[in-house]
Image (cartoon, rainbow, N blue to C red):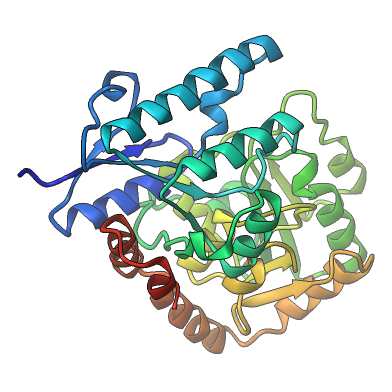
Length: 347
């Protein structure tokens, strides 16, 4: 009998290296991992595994009638897989899609979880939240941390500070990633400006959502706030991170932040609110977490981050990265794929 194939849905994404890095680690264990797309739709057979990641992109559409049609086809397809003896798994990256929760999302995600043999979550806090949201037993949700991004993004060697005219002796706070209301960049600008630093700088780099104005930055800018309102190419991502002294993620809402793990992967401390699973990744000494309900929390966190001991911080982050090793994560997933008792895997 041939070995089962893992159909990773998707194996490679232009927006996130998570599934690519996970697939590599599983392949190192001698298991074939195939990219799931329309061409592979009817290939999974008995004993094979279909591992889903961002299902809302599959069942959602621009208009509700089309969403219903796509959703019904999606669920029917999963029933066909179950009938064929295919094992189904889902990594819950976000409890709800970024656009927000809807009744339809709730219905679809509950049904999806019922059809899955098990689901993976990226932290203990997400396991509790997902169990409550989808009316599922916690022991059906297996915690597998989000792996690190060490060496995932080779840089070009671009001197980012020179590009934006930021002196080498300035403490540089960096926000990088897509800019939209829930990311809280407006709060970051306000908090940074209130510090009135002579020795600091703030760089905001990322593509704003359509219709989202960055005028609030111009109004607050004293020259120490630099803005690159464009998509940051993967080939320069490392260069931006290398230039920074700290990465700030002033999110209004978050489940698990790949951006925080990306920052830690480059030994950069993280400033972020104590939301979702951030406390489990930005552990003590790896950055500064603040109370999102404290109006002065972000400003105080920025100040505290500037006073962190760099060598001690890097040692703490190195220890955290060992916990986020992809091979450890893949080993745990392989045990779940093989049907090991979930209580034993979660122990």
